Image (cartoon, rainbow, N blue to C red; front, side):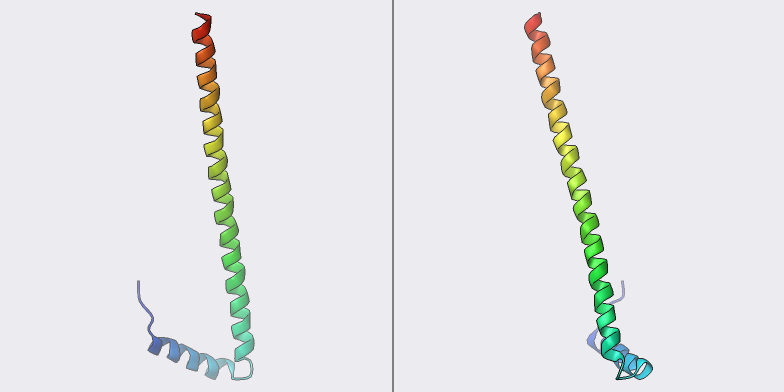
Length: 79
């Protein structure tokens, strides 16, 4: 994956100021920040949902194992 250094970032900023203009540049940066924040929150929520699902699956598996153990124990006691 290509790496971006300080010089490349400086070139991008200078070009952005020239293309967008110094007056609108802060507004564009604010919008980019808002989009970045929205995307980060979106993926954080997705990750939380996956974690919750994994926890539910683990909990259900442990409950099924306990039920299986209890039914096996009760079957052995009847014999």
